[in-house]
Length: 319
Length: 141
Image (cartoon, rainbow over the protein chains, first blue to last red):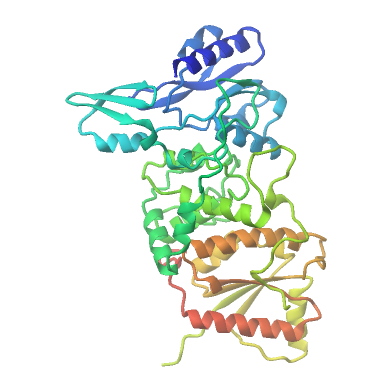
């Protein structure tokens, strides 16, 4: 995507030189192949560092609640712009403070799947149209991008930026045919014990590093319930009961706030299937309250409001 | 050997359900003694974390009861609570916690007999499930 990359640099430089923003948040080359890292650019000359490719997987909205009174430009994919809207709705940032450099969907590549399919060390990565060329010490392999997309990208239904001040590239047509809840629906069909076994197996991988929390733009609480020591809600060890509670509440706290960018799952060093939890929450929020996160900044978050007509079929109302 | 009696924790809102329980008491209506009551100011005071914490500590079933819609002392507390409960109840079932472990009911201050009935039903349902095994913390607190 050299064209997109060139434009990002150009726009970033413009913004910085004309003092429209204090800094730009984007991506730079990572220290390892297949990786990029978030970068904060303060000077127009440094904009050459900015890159754009299929590995720019982080949701950069995560830095926004901490910008204070600065004015910031941020490179954002479709899902990231929804996080920005959600943060605006929750009063964490002001719209005037943010210049959104929106980039329509391209689909991010699951680097772990590629790593698993080659033996030996990956030394060089080249991206060409819809293919990825991987070079190692003893091998060379070509991967088709489409087959290695993240699952969240594969089922993405909001591929264009919801808000953008500078749009780079062309908007694309939204997909209406994909069934984003297919995995959840499939899981719901299992028996209650099968569901528990799978859930338990997944959460027991957890090492409590909280990378999922740190990677999530919506996890901005000053003090997370898990860090609270008085009252100490849950134990800090690796007891499987505590792990379960952590993952239940982490997902629950995302109700009406998760945009399904998949950052939590990508950040997880233990490769826990975290999206199968948040996706269910998203599904129920859609079901019960007909709400999808981050689509407009006028609607308040579903759990901060109510409707007298809300469904209550799960409550014994005596009728 | 006698059947193990389930322990049930009930979060009752101060204004309706707790008063309903009180009415059941002063009216001398019998209901199963399995229930332990925690009085909360409003059903919306019940954080889903409370429910999980109870299950973690070996409580076999949790009931949350509050005012009927429209009757909340704080005008809209139970409406807000209803939304939270819809999500957490569904989610707990999804990850494999039995449906009847966590139950919700509306009980007004005038419904003493109904309170007894609700407790009876909840207790029966939880008894049918047997002692809780999932989510229980076996070491430490």
